[in-house]
Length: 349
Length: 224
Image 1 (cartoon, chains in turn yellow, brown):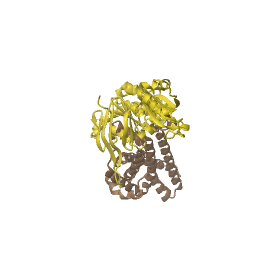
Image 2 (image 1 turned 90 degrees about the horizontal axis):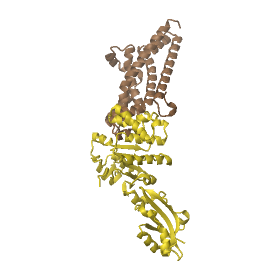
Image 3 (image 1 turned 180 degrees about the vertical axis):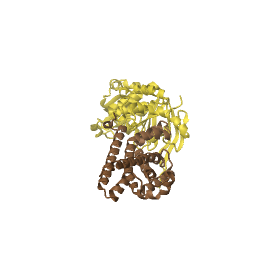
Image 4 (image 1 turned 180 degrees about the horizontal axis):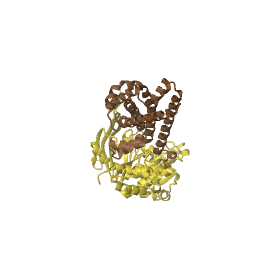
């Protein structure tokens, strides 16, 4: 196991409140390892503390207590000069891009190089290379006001990559963009992650972003991490209600309205149907398990809703099915024996 | 108005231009660093120095609230010390500069405060020092606002420079009072007023044009 790129070790952030009874706890006892070379997402509602968490990584916020290690260096205890050195190894992109209106695309991308004191002779070719990498060669001499949102974020990404960072922080980078542009920006980030081996830590309030590019995820709620792990396992076995609510609508398994309305907690008469959520993971996602349940056990299965998609580059399927209540235990046993997960949602009829 | 007054008007105009230009320049040299400091030194800001910020703010407010004509008289000893005399155009530059500097400081502070805090954060995230943030982010981004502020300051200085005429400062104001008022020559008074109006118009138009050249925020203001 390689050392994590970023390691939060019991990090707490308090904001002293004048006149109030106690301090505001923005983050409480955060333990989180962000693996090298992976894309890790932190998801939470606004005010959950995800922004504070992200901004600690490059020292824009300091921990009140606990330890934070980035690229093997202690950020919390760093001097101003040490912090500047760390920041040059950590790129950051922003929701509202934060580009200088007074500089062209090329000028914006050159800024971190100027700040790092690079030779003028080296800045121009490096800038041109970055502009090409994000596909903005034709716009190199335009000003941000002349660009679309997606183009602006590309400039932001190129600027964040300019100093050759090992870690890229993304602060809601796609939240101000439309779905198509979001897709393009996420693709670009994923490409950068793969080609440069860059560790990406992003915060978002959209589970779709996590699903699309994050291999790891942490769910944050009221300043605490309530669930963390590989995206795949968190998506397939969400434990915390916050995670579940974020997942709703993202994994394609929303209960059809006409069924949800009739759902009862217990089976009624003999002819009742049990409503079961079946989650397929890994290789099982492509196995015809329901067909086998019908063929081998003679249980007729009624598919009510479902979807199969890719999460963390692995197939992930979720179906909501109806089957006779009296065959429920047997069917669940059969499916789980074959590596599928089941959950009884209720009964109808 | 006779023809021999034309050279007098011309000389007075040059005196006014001399006073305004030099006091604007000196006022900017003093006011700009103060403005930058005021804009960046509140608690938790880039150059956080809350006590110095408060003290400087009070000094600037005191200077700004002193009526100009009183300032001129009150600092006569200082003017003598610096200019060697308290009469004439060069002497007038001392009170004009002292009036302009705090005004310019506030205008530049305002322009810099308009810069989106996100840009400061982005620059900090790049590892920029406070000095680099001021030089590479705040000043270039605030430039259109700074230019418009300086334009306003120059226009005000044209007005003030006419006022120093009342205490022997020379320039168009002096001419207007001596010829137009004391010698009952309304033609001279009118000429003085017209020249002042033209000067103000010229300064305002130039300032707006330069500011627009610097302003890349909206496509319609694109330079070239």
